[in-house]
Length: 352
Image (cartoon, rainbow, N blue to C red):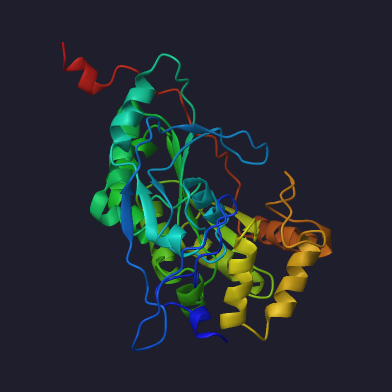
């Protein structure tokens, strides 16, 4: 194995694949003493976007509107389908995605303006549609908390998904939204193996902390569930039932799953990761992915990209259904309410 392809401590990717639009390659210099690449320091870059709410046109995604205070994600999940979005910004989907984070510092003020607009129709807003709203820098910046405060002010329903225990910091705002059936929180759990998590999702909360987050949110009366995402054949697929059982015991009320998808350069990043960490399983894993994706490592077809196709994908689907039924998950209606939305917030009323 080449020295420049060794894993980098605290990062998922090992280098920067060429940007598919610009054809450039920005690599990192090797350390003169060790001969290895150092972990690049995280850079925060101001995002000057004038709008915050974006709209989804994909028929297999269960929300229309979403907000993302950050672009790029320090979590460094090796399989992350959002990595290629960084290429639209002129960066790489590799180390750049994990270390060059675009920050919408004024996200909350933009959100307040957009919720006040006459054209806004109250609806569920998804948070973490692209990158995790509770990635490590949120602890310092608090932009996600500011946005939740605005959503609570307007009583606009919101669905959160995260891998980070930091979500429990905002239990007060989440509980306030819960009073009006305006909140649903999903904790993503890929594996219960902390060592695997450490190399696959290096800067995320470890599995026990995620289960603690489910328990704390549930104890506070907040609707919380688990997303087994992504299921990676030959790496994590054997853990589905155990994850469901642990999440249920912690207080999860609903569950979902997705199967790994590898768009654009994510394929190369993931294959390299397998060579570094699981060379003995590489062929088995890739062959199963090929089976699920119709002979390709990625199939972007709507309706198939999340769950896959073929006999193995069907086995996963059936196993999930059997055990969610057994554990009585997904029994209640998940519909959040827009009935309590208020256009004239307390801040506006204080002007009179």
